[in-house]
Length: 555
Image (cartoon, helix red, strand yellow):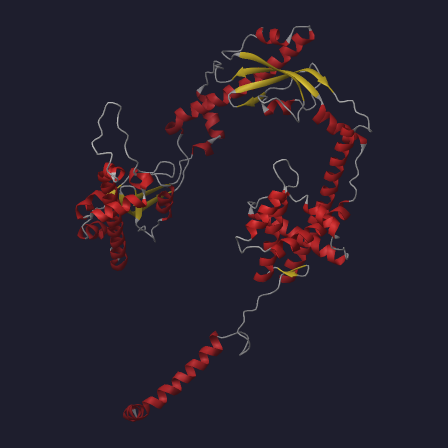
């Protein structure tokens, strides 16, 4: 029987082989080919509908993001927006256009369109008004790139006009009460004169003598702050570039070419006033000749570093090909003409010198593990290095004895800050009492006692508003004025290394009638803000509902 099979295969091998090949090919087509069945080979992706847009379609996504990017560039004047904000803007803009289509909102008439263009930020000059030169420059720049065409700009601007119409319809006129206008006027137009008492935190030196129980309690409550950072222990193989310098031979043409490609790296040294130049200044090559040795040394070292990187790469390839056991690794590396050196464990904040303090190299060390022990060749300023994983040490709680000094320092700083805050409350009470007795603010500050080393000084600012503060007024002071009446002293706020207490020397609230121009201007601004907030809230609800419906359909 076996002989018969052998004879049959020998006589009809070619026919049988092609028959088997045909079966394999047909099976491959049925198995790997398009699903289901023998149908189309196009990949089926379930649509994710957003209004009349398919977010699963690369073409629809490209159109959505492309138009939104151009709209932002036009309306904001720049494009560097975070990706999340960009996506949110793109979705809201498309939802507005969809509503405009459903409501049959018209495209702008030419006069309205021209007026709209004059409000586009990309076409504004430094004074915030439409600038014909900026408009012309924008159009000229379009011709230098194929990213957008003038037709794209025109289409997006006309769509933006309709987006504004939708926002105005959704937001309405923006209802504003008289109390809102009065509140905003009080915040922005009140004229202040203030005195600021500054307490020097750095000089504050209260007597703090913690007991052992207090320190232990503080450590127990903040033990998470004293956990040791994760560490890694590696061995390493260094390939110093200096070991390869002897192999480098340079021609004069190579040295000159390197100089001409990097002239800024090799400035000609300046001679001292009493030093005679050693090179003839009439020589046209004087700049090159003055730094030739420096150029040669730099080029030799560059090429030596390249050889060091190649040697490191050869070692990693040999390690990958031979897969030596961990116990035989040092011997194998020695056989390759290199030396495996041990290193102490380190964390991310204190890398060893052989890593060249490079964050990328530190990350590479921490990515190593028992299953991936050998790093890629890592270039350093001195040459190259290859890392070998030995041990990963996870973070762990520290013993109190090991961090006692740090615990004590942290406790003292924490207690000092708490006592400084308490000092601020006491100083405020004393200043308030002194002012109530008719003592001028600067005299009241000078009379303060018990400051335990902290110095107190006074600085005054007169007649300013919060929307137009003096140049040197600390921002924290402007915030302290909120709700502060004339003659009152604010709570102390900590800013950097000092505490600030603000005395409202005078407070002149604006007295404006409804017919005043400023009142009407602020009323319009608040109306626009309220309208935009209402429209934005409606659009967010609409977008969330549409995205939720799309997710439900997918699931």
